[in-house]
Length: 117
Length: 110
Image (tube, rainbow over all chains, first blue to last red; front, side, top):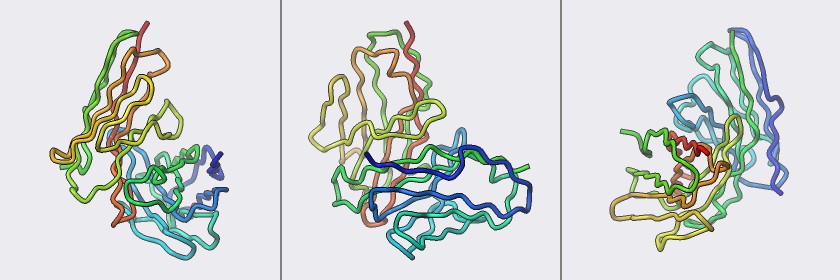
């Protein structure tokens, strides 16, 4: 079974703090993703990575950065947390699949609920 | 306009009912299609892929109409355990990323 783990289930931080969210997958997947999920807004892609050292901006990258130094680990960084970054953060991984292939399935971690006070 | 739009719901149905969810997508470059299920306070999990010819998995049937850019999910003989939020997902291979619909919440009642 694919397993995607996230460093914390719940996190409370103060405005202005630097926040690290860690994600690790154990299936040697090339692609990894960070989303945030908010009521009424669905899942929105923050950043993704095709492979080690590679990163691409998603739909809402402002206020975030990422790091992919090892294939199994993808970190999301909030340089200076703000209250509007209070959200559920979901990490996902996926094997690099062919177009139309079910291998494009994404496997999600359990999520980190971040509260910024 | 959102890239992926779903019925807003919520859907409240009795056990045994048949319920259908619809989804439209705007990017014609989308190449793979999926339905995910998300239980309350849990992560999304793949329910089924959607193929052009339509596909069935037990009580679940998915359809894709590329010309109309429309995806559907039909659930027959609803069970209490089907209560969840169903997410429509389209994947663009060129962009390398998926776009999720906002989800439709289903509650199946005894």
